[in-house]
Image (tube, rainbow, N blue to C red; front, side):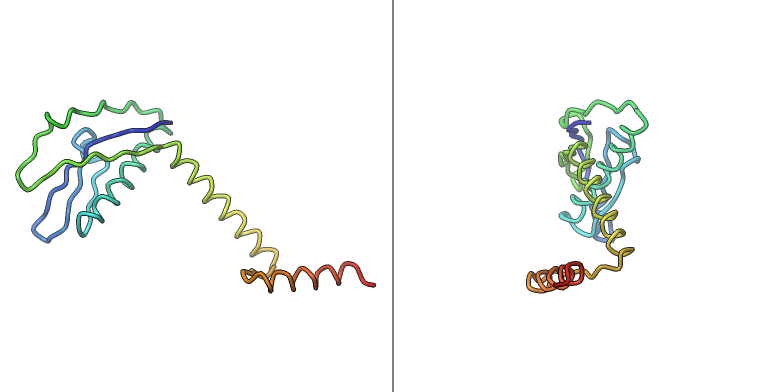
Length: 133
């Protein structure tokens, strides 16, 4: 697990969308966006998914090309996309933990309280039930 950098090739298509490919990866991580910011977000997401899967299967990843050697037309441009798979895996683990906790709360039928006064009242009522005077 580590940090990777690959160059995304962004191409404007006739529908106004921005297509994204990674020349070093073929079409394995191809995606698109409705505009440049969306395409950059989707590029990061696609590359992250590709790299996580490659690590899981111990696939050999290609070296990153020198951007000066990647051919592109005047309606295309290159953007470096960096992914840290260690951070991505930590984020996945946190999401799994949140889902696990949400399921536990749902199964326990405990109320979900967000207001501090409601939490204090709930705990006070629960304490009175368990410790009658």
